[in-house]
Length: 329
Image 1 (cartoon, rainbow, N blue to C red):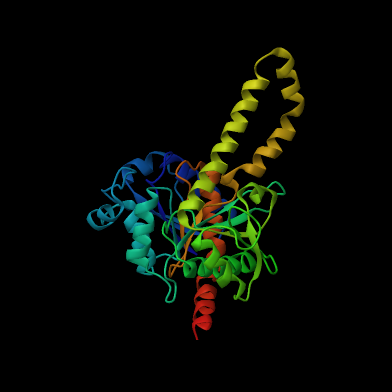
Image 2: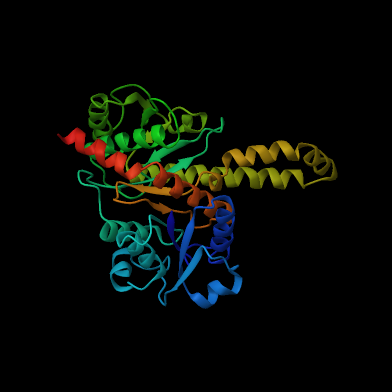
């Protein structure tokens, strides 16, 4: 497959992007990559590879840019050019770790929505204590969701987890303030009723406190709530490991104990590390558009590439398109 990558997006670009690409090329012999960005900066650290093409761009979308204005005015930016490559058929999928709002806007304006999908969802895989992970839809693409949007998210999530992650009849949960039916606001109450009518394995409401315990394989919510959940999980994990590090380096006795427990803590960290789960797919678009975390290191970039490759190989977009079309008939 051919993959278009914004080499200039993210906190650690372009070094982390290039390192992640090199790792992916070693792992996947059928992968070809088109890097978009400042050719001079890229070539400082890029290892020559016949499967890498560098396309120079002289504009950059930053985190401070207004999403819509940036996409419309900076058409030669690394981000927009990567998305445009997918639209033009030059690449099968694209990845960026840059400005999330601008990337979502570029995906909508350039690639376009699948017919029948009202609003795309930004959907990352998040860790669980058991290591299986769960898919969260939506984490910010659609802040003001309607019940029909959440119902479409459930269908999309079910298809993805079954076809890509190999989970038969994935459990679909609706994020709510209580597990009992009838809980929540108007949005969740109406969405609950619609989810019950879908041909999916809807298990009812799930609470935020149970997500890391694997309460559901797919969790549905509006973008505002989903973004709060995402940031809370990330922040809690970072704070927890910061506290542990502080405690285990506070005395000689604790340092000795840390040495003994280091392998166990390493396993725990891997289970809670978002970089192992890939990026967030912008589900509902006509091609795989993957948003890598803004602070992605090489492993995070590699995981995002792995996710894009899997979505392409498993024809996820085609499966979603077919399912949505059949449900509308």
